[in-house]
Image 1 (tube, rainbow, N blue to C red):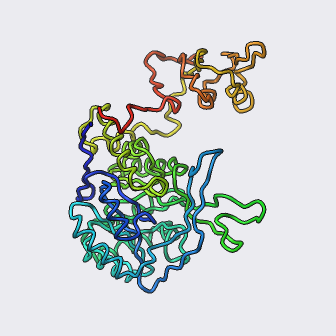
Image 2: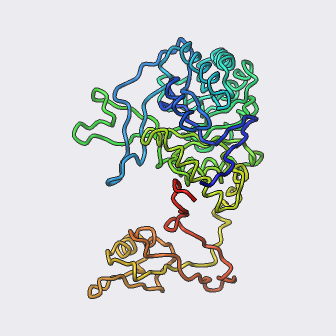
Image 3: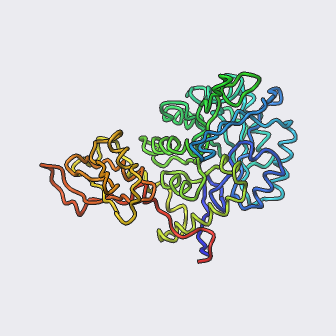
Length: 432
């Protein structure tokens, strides 16, 4: 079995591996968190604690899933709010967890309505033994507009809340950001001014997943009504990665400490977040599908990736891809990459033909006699839609040519692997 150093140091706290439960239903009590620690998770962000005067009263049912054809859990809608347990019980559970697992990381998530709430909660979780505190500025299903994602779009309010928390603790403070905003940069800078040390990004995306066509109500159906609430899972990963890049490329934020969240289901997802600047990673939706045991796939897969990349310490991978994401006006537009069809693999299904005819530039026609596509290079723009829709991987990147009048050496142009040829090394759980 390959062994690599998955440990990371984040805001002065040592994690045995970067994988944490995010603040959500998966870390809702002592028993759940204990099971996660025993399974091998490096840290837990305990489900968000709120003031004693704020009463949590949940709806039922409160989940929905977005599907595509036969694929379940493309995304997941969650209407659940904060911890429903008495505050004293949650604090006692946190104390017990820290006593029994002193080398595991325990992060307290808190949410207040007033500055006094934030300061008091910070004092309480510090006394309970938390290693750091996450400020939930971003839950999209709160019933109060003074809490949750409405707060996360207001820089001044976030700044004052950070200041209030800092009055109650000396622990590192993470501000959890909402994606329901055009840019996080002003809010992040305001939080830094207020004393925040790092950031968690992203929380869930406001959504309506499905509408019951017979009853004409969104799902989940709660006595004939539904509401906008948070979307998580694989479908939000591109949004999460975009915000990561936006933050790490903003002037003055290039080394911003970030805990990455949003659609992490596989070791590949984890590696993408790390390469774009996340040091630790938080997971919910994948655990809700597969349980805590997925930690073995996440850690083993990441170690195999490190082996093939000749990297001994995971921390050395953080942020390596940020420099390669540039504004669109800086992309090289001097060349064109043509598709290459492997006729031994082609099954003659016609999907490439249909997509090129109806969705691209009509460079593929159809030979009825041979039941195969016919490629017209003169019409091809090199978009590679045909390669993406091919169900058997018979179409790959082919010849690279310079556009008329453009200079350059096609042999020196790096087009690398596209989505179709995604990096897949050895199976993660086998002996090597």
